[in-house]
Amino acid sequence: MIISMRPHASREEVDSVCERIRDFGFRVHSIEGEERVVIGVVGVGGDVTACLESLEATPGVESAMRISAPYKFVSLEFRKERTVIRAGKAEIGGDEFVIMAGPCSVESESQIMQTAEAVAAAGAKILRGGAYKPRTSPYDFQGMEEAGLKLLAKAREATGLAVITEVMSDRDAELVAEYADIMQVGARNMQNFALLKALGKCGRPVMLKRGLSSTIKELLMSAEYIVAHGNSQVMLCERGIRTFETATRNTCDISAVPVLNELTHLPVIIDPSHATGKRSLVPALAKAAVAVGADGMIVEVHPCPQKAVSDGAQSLTIEGFEEMMRNLSGYIALWKQERMADMAVAV
Ligand code: PEP
Ligand code: MN
Image (cartoon, rainbow, N blue to C red; front, side, top):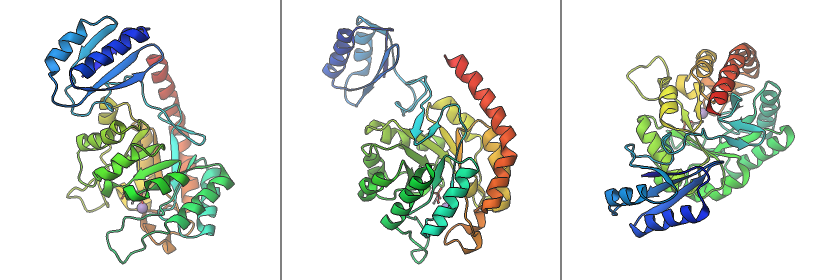
């Protein structure tokens, strides 16, 4: 259920609505907007119809409605205003198409420094790099762990880029949050519910990647876990899903972006690297990400992809990244015009 209070309803009115909700055996999750308070009613077991009828007649309430979607806090019904997430100098979900770039894995100081400086100069605002790597084979490189996190922090210091890095386990969440500006949940962990709950309390924005065979609804339900456990700073990432097609590593569900934009207020990022698995295909999909109205993209870049310990085949060289950024600039300018127009309408 969602209760929308009248604009400028008094504190007493809001408090008495919350008290009534609790009397019915539910919990309260309220969001204070500029003009009005919106209250989410959470929990099971209470009498929803009786609670709804009672609230409709309560002073200060503008509307009380049952929501059909099983996810609540992440739905556009719950919050009309788009979520904007700040990380370093970047604002994701606002009027900038945000580029996150860097290697699949952090490998060495020189590798991460060289990449960070180059991607920053070419226009990226966020540095990616995995220190904890979810690998299909236990014999493959598993990541530098805390030593990798320290190198990412050093690269942030040197370049001013914010850092996004993957967290694989709830046990590592606190440590990763000490170094990361954005916590990445990898596709394989989209339904690691212990991790999602821990990220609700981590105090950092989260980028949740869509699972290899997950539906959009399942993605939103996973995002709901993080928000319901206390963290509303969540962005979603389409990184390609499993289909019968073998020409690409995964199939980028490009329509997930407009679908998500109809269902949720959370920002949406495209990952053209994992979606295609092939360096030559990344720039075309990056254009599609801009054109389809994503809020940004995350792309793998390596100074020497043939020597990369993971995902070399899909990593752009530094020169390739620079060229892609030059070719994207006109598309991004159009994106910005459209976004500013949308934001003006929303106001
Ligand atoms: C990654 O970003 O390097 C990664 C492992 O991505 P995904 O979880 O989408 O496979
Ligand atoms: Mn990778």
